[in-house]
Image (cartoon, rainbow, N blue to C red; front, side, top):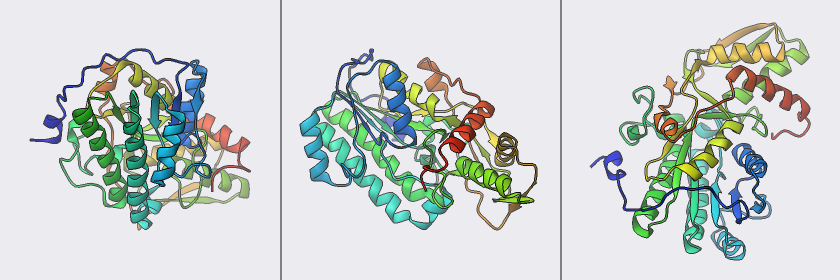
Length: 331
């Protein structure tokens, strides 16, 4: 039986409805790219009892501390956006850390939530869970049908484990918990570190520094030909609330725009947004990663949601945010 077939039905009977805006709602990872956007959106939508903890206050890799936190706060809803994340370089350099730390975070949070019988949990993963050469656009049932991209396979395995933990809890305990797999995200509070960032914030930093220093050229990794789909994190936050209130099922839901562009096209858009007028070069000795990664977002559309922030506008607003916060951005 395939993963998709095993996920067709699990006997959970639940009708999604509007969340109680006054209920205790825990956003794990509320200071990160995704978590901070979810916090902003939930606040804007009237949630009055949001809770979060910085990693210095609560280490989610610590099982005892995580269970104690859930026992103390007793959240009704949980969004699990906490994770160790990074780009190709970070994933390829530290695969064990990406595997072990994400497994620990997921296991502790989900088991602590289970101990408290949390009503509704949303687990967030990544589109890298799908095979490197999956048919495009990638449907949810492509999961476990082929080999992963080797540069981030450890991280992907951890996220796949999270999906199956959600499915297992649904099947064994009947709790209506769900999973969502976003495409490449960007926006305020992103990681702009040269060694730890994903492609779009890395491009923003690289081109902005080249503009400021007057560098005649900018060199990017790879060939520029791979195609990527990007979703603004504010759109992602809106999709999260929409899914919590309108979707239930054991299968993960893809979250994206349904459109992609080449890395070269995206680089050109970033250069224009920052006002860089020099030449772009490509270091073809560096890896490209997956040739194309475009999500099929039909399931999300069927649930009644589509993205609203265009890539050009999203890049411009992210450049503006980066310039305003350059002294305090994550390194």
